[in-house]
Image (cartoon, rainbow, N blue to C red; front, side):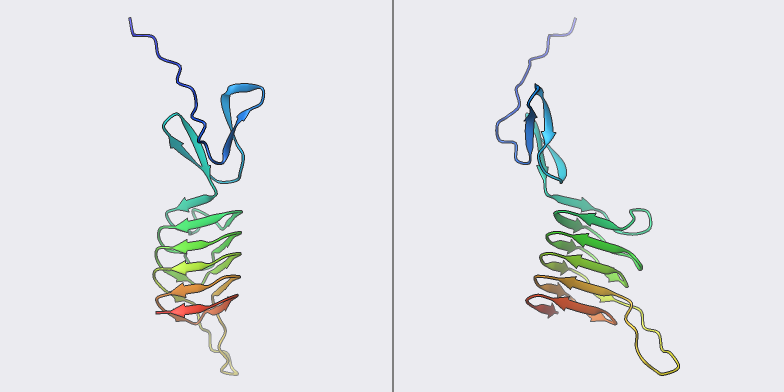
Length: 150
């Protein structure tokens, strides 16, 4: 026969989650975010991490911070109430943040030459804070404080 298990109570240090008022054995999310399993409970972080943004993930809209480990592919839209971090490159996509946008790689838009030889932008980056990237080409960038291109 197996040994009876111990009933371990939840820790009181659970940021972003709360006890159900009707059941102390049930945790509820107190904020919108990503659940993180910790010893003796679950915390909810107002950050979501995704491997990349493409047609399989779809467009993203999140009331917190978005951490994208890889690239944001052409035609995709990403909106974050707080910050957006991109570990790769942004290709002709739209990013909008209430905070800062940080891109480890660069920004590449599309250029189309019309009969009047005007240049149209294929990517748009806008935020209320600062934008930083390694390089930028054919992209519209608007920032509340600063734009830093390496």
